[in-house]
Image 1 (tube, rainbow, N blue to C red):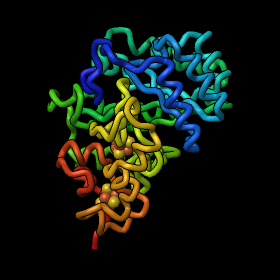
Image 2 (cartoon, rainbow, N blue to C red):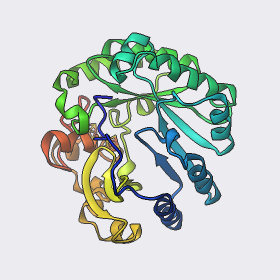
Image 3 (cartoon, protein in one colour):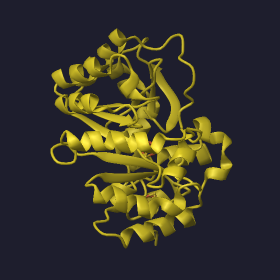
Image 4 (cartoon, helix red, strand yellow):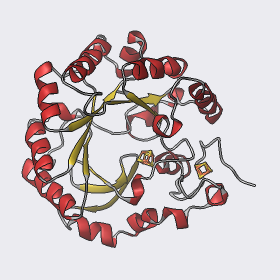
Length: 302
Ligand code: SF4
Ligand code: SF4
């Protein structure tokens, strides 16, 4: 996908081994972690995907998996269900042409919907929640209310993300939509049935993204980042344990206390106890982790 905030490409030489990944998972469990999120690339084609999900399960944690859904056969769906994997399927539009154009693959929509069908057949939406995620871009913007309706009609929770200027998307200015357009989109969504902006537009409602209080992101080479959208290294788990990195990193400390450190209009905003915008968007646009989220349209400042 050319709007992906990861700079994924060919396999790197020094990616973490399965053994190293298991060690990190154990560290997360020791720290009281409850969820491990697997993102890509495409996690379902990782050779140890099921072993890893099983290991996470054995340690009493939940696996959340961001997937394009195209490889989810009935057998894979069943196995995911048995291992309590919570999938979040990337779906950019309910219109096949728009989705295929965005992900750069003709026929991808059909395969993704096939994967969703297989997940629903084995019990997802009924016994384990199913979510989709979609990145708001100029290509799918006009189709997002329709996508929301389609996804909700299948008992799936949609969530929409703003495009972050990092990774591949950095070279595609034409994909960005303005904050006024995002505001209009939110206005359309609140008129739809069963809307829930906090779920649908995380980091864009007064109950924003709170991931920095309790999570961090680890890339394939072991570098610890604040989150997947803030590409700053805080340490490497090959050199220090995860708990040491979390304890020692000034950046992690800054973000764990973001409610005290937030600046600008976010600091003055009446929503700031529950919201601090998206730090990924803010950092990409301003270079300042604690500045006002420049794409926020609903600040409440007197
Ligand atoms: S702050 Fe990070 S985790 Fe939260 S929405 Fe933005 S990019 Fe995602
Ligand atoms: S100004 Fe900041 S705290 Fe207020 S709603 Fe916007 S992003 Fe959230």
